[in-house]
Amino acid sequence: MKYLILIHHNQQATELWASMSAEERAEGILAHTELHRDLVDSGEMVASEALADPSQARRVLVSAGQTTVTDGPFAELKEHLAGFYLVDCESIDRAIEHATRIPEAAFGLVEVRPVMSPNGMEM
Amino acid sequence: VSTEAVSIEHLLREASPRVLAAVVRRYGSFETCEDAVQEALLAASAQWPRDGVPANPEGWLINVASRRWIEQWRRDSARNRREVAAAALDATAPETVSDIDDTLILLLLCCHPALTPPSQVALTLRAVGGLTTAEIARAFLVPEATVAQRISRAKQRIKASAAEFELPPPDALPERLDSGLHVLYLIFNEGYTASEGPQLHRVDLTAEAIRLTRQLHAALPDNGEVAGLLALMLLTEARRPARPDAQGNQVPLAEQDRTLWDKSLIDQGVELITGALSSAPLGPYQLQAAIAAVHADAPSAEATDWPQILGLYNLLQQASPGAMVDLGRAVAMAMVMGPRAGLCELAVAERDPALARHYRLNAVRAHLLELAGEPEAARTEYLTAAERTTSIPEQRYLASRAARLGVPKPHEH
Image 1 (tube, rainbow over the protein chains, first blue to last red):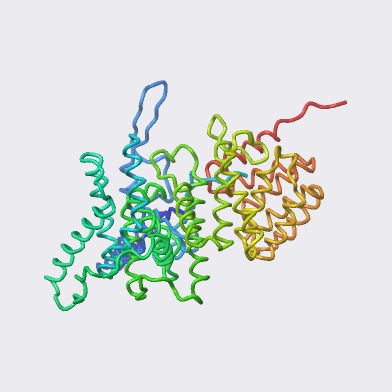
Image 2: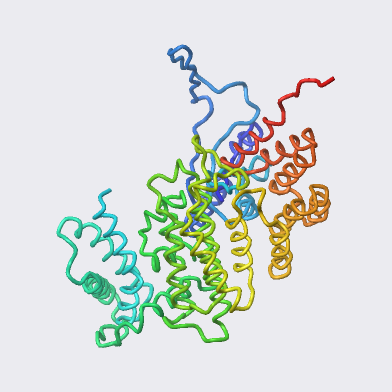
């Protein structure tokens, strides 16, 4: 089963990150590096990326064949998506186990979502 | 894809376990031999379509794999001579004992208890099935690197556990065989549940599982559970042509056009399960196959022998209790004694925490409520099931059932 582990960010987390010492920041980065390495080693990693700041987002509108592109996210967001891990593992409990290792989980900003599968039983 | 390319692919898959066994007998190390054989298979799939199939395909593969193994051994031994076993180059080791034993030994080795099920599945498909890492990755919709890592990790574990390339001792055999059967079942299930669209360019995992289970059945013809699993696969596969409708949506068993079912697969399955039931100790795969055989035997959904299916579910509940068995039994009960009886049974089954929040419970309850003439309640349950499932085709099906019940009926006066 695939699960998407979403890492959100908010003002509080961003400010805290900025106020951290170099060592503390290195620790946070190391936690991600180690999680990434372990997921690759265990054969559970599908993909993982960090996302650019939401100010870099483009909104795309296609209407009557005309495309309009505007800057910025959909709304003034309290929380925004900052990165993700797409994992393929045995159960949601296992995915949660991985999620607990993400430093942002300390702020309650980590979410685990089951991914829909194209497979299905006949009922 | 030309028929020639398909037949080369078949030839390579059939030869794969025999070639691997021969190379392991020669050089001893499963881990490195498996890599060498994989390289030989890749070389063959590139060269044979161009240059033609050699007169002795297996001999060709064994030679190429041996050459690759020796090249690798020279590179490794140059790095660290002390680690090299002196016997490594003994090419006089005994040749193939028998094809059947080799396949069985390999399957049991790949289903070693030290491995996780996804690793067992990946390694079995590569070492026994002769599939490439890329094919396995496409079949399971994960990146090739992920599958490669699962395989290499699995081989390291097998090496660390010092497992030998031989049949496990008789007292360990039944347990290892159980895990082998489970792996074959998982492979089949992955293929059987795959929807039509994304399956393009994916290896046909049901065909692969059936092929490997046939080989296992040839090795152990008297084992009732091996025969039961093979029968279950054939009887399930027989329904494949009737499963998608014209739009590619899933058609439930009760609404399938039974004239589309594959008669020859049904005959094979029924013969196998009949033989197993009359001669071997009863087991869960045989019971599931027997249930599938009762369905296959019914000319229409209405003509299904539900009392017999209920009896089989009662036995299955004893042999292999579980949430999914409880659900199947509740449906059978509803069909024999009416939807109310089935709903009561569901209320009991729901006490199992594994089932309480499972969408299948809601889906079955929806179906039984519909039969009981409670469209409103059924609709709510269908919607809950649709919300909880993580399967796209099932969600589509459940939502369509809910929509069908949602159309308000004109008032009758």
